[in-house]
Length: 263
Image (cartoon, rainbow, N blue to C red; front, side, top):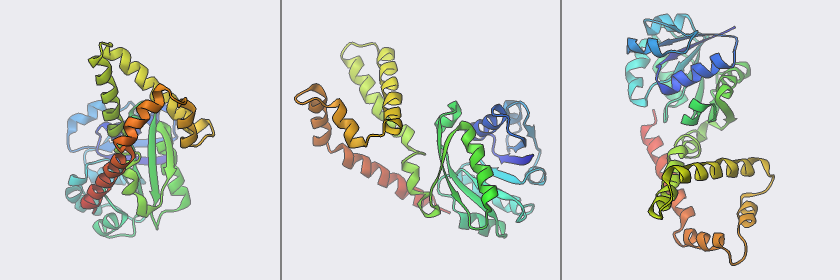
């Protein structure tokens, strides 16, 4: 049985705990949050601890499910209780392995993780990087935890800031893209909920085509684009608006901010 503790019992922390419980992982799960009322929201089977020290004593895997701005307050307290036997898992944007090691004062076994909010529905896409002191077995255990809520892919440690735009922040970009289509439908007298359902299903179907059809993205675009047809007319507008350049700029801005938040 693995012993897993969460510092922070918000939406993402709660979703990860819930995924572990729902999948029946052989784990003893506990949580600590500075807001004691969060204890009432924990998934069934998760025990609430009254302090960081109590949580660390009960856990081998310690998940830092808190916002980057809170780390400077939490890490000195955690440093009192952490040993090199612990595995520290951070899911916060910009938090680095070096920051964790220097803050804790030990050669901490770390896993740096970037999940995304679809994990809440079991459709998460999580990127993970293995710390230099972390064993393969420890890393595999952490990866299996994130696989309870979707897929989990390995990314080099020095690319964990760049990957944020691809999976961590991208749901918001996709929602904005979807909003434009739904707004267009409503502007043209189509029920918004109907348009949302149709566009959302188009997204999920297109996603499966991307991962399961065996075709390249360029080939998939061509499949939908009949010569002289409506799709090509629409694509011309996207090309003229330099959609690909806009997306690249969006991703670069996201990455730049990740480096600014980096600790």
